Length: 267
Image (cartoon, rainbow, N blue to C red; front, side):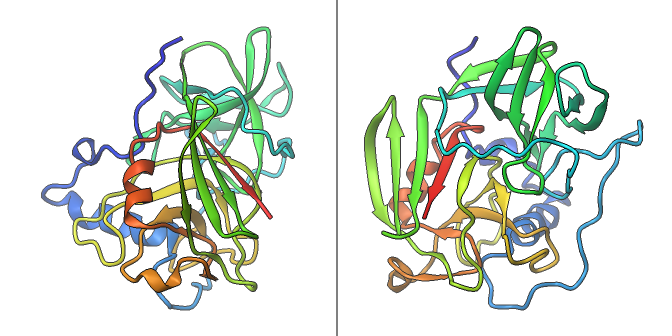
């Protein structure tokens, strides 16, 4: 097991130049859709499928035939990355009902392990419903361990960052409004998006969770994310569409957190 999973923010590794710039900008805005004040888009995101006909376990898909994780524990930080598309099953050895791709949102797929059995790993997935998990074969996987954990307390509107069990930072943040609350439960750092022309945040850090009240937002799947905000007066308030708006210092610290790192949101 390696001790060095990739960090969430690696803008240089993203195709930011040339024709790829509009794609990244669109991805940042459409996937999360948290920054603007527009109404949710009426259409649902397409359910991407693989060559095998199985749905991909991405932030754009809904996987109803898999177990839902209900734990609020951060876990031990073990994360895995599939070298290629990997079958996902409801139980060890059961037929595959989805595939976990090796990349997500222009970056590598790293997901946290929440249970292990000989030859199998149960991992959190970035799809709907929130907390969906699945069993993947313990072959063709790169394993690492994140020493970090992120915890968000919606009641206190606080976010804390931990390293090796020690709190290394705490900030007052903005969370979801009463009609569009930030979902609670255990999730993880999914990706990093660096818009070529930032409007409200230089980085958007999606997690593996979605709004419980919005099926889509701004044309995307309603993915929740951490991101900055240009005005400080929002911090300490419940005003977002489900994302967590964080101060600039918090965003810089989160940018150094490995992909797959557990995120626990409590009421």
